[in-house]
Image (cartoon, rainbow, N blue to C red):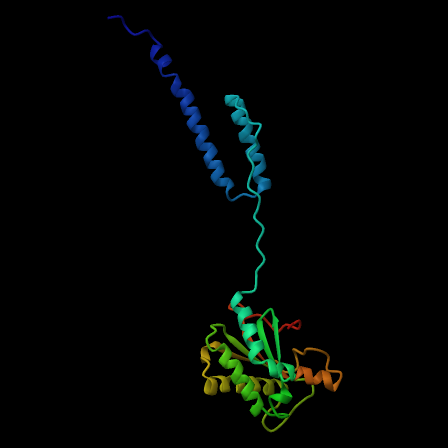
Length: 243
């Protein structure tokens, strides 16, 4: 038997060299794609260009169609939840007479839905005891939101006229006491779950407008029942509440 010519084995396995090169290039290609999935388009562009040139040099492939990274998808604007619009319409309907008589206002702002009651329809001067008319309005609101899961924040506000009585030493104390009175009524008489409620007393420091006339001071003296958006517990008082 003739001995195998030296080098014939190497010639027969020469295809493995090209195959190994191809596997190496494919591995590098998919590794780069994976890494590029976390890169932005500006960083990815030179990488794609380098890969294109490498494949064109190695295999002479037609690379006229350049690889491109997908365009960033613009964020969709947040829309008001349908449930909130439904609740707004329901409150506007059941509180329609009081709204028309200017005994309260129904608004929307960054916090959620706001039912604002002026203090002359809610409390006597210097008092935190709810008036009978206020109890009726607050009970109506409570019945409307009883099945709504949103938390509620009750906010007390005053004008900048200093107050010092035997019971309340400042507007801070009076505004907080009024907010607490509304919560006590909602829990004890209306049956709203206490865990949904919180109270805030802002005194004269979150006015709707300047305290330069008696009419403007009257607007600043109020109690707001705020039906918060589900993620808005920490959103502060906003001045641009709108109907």
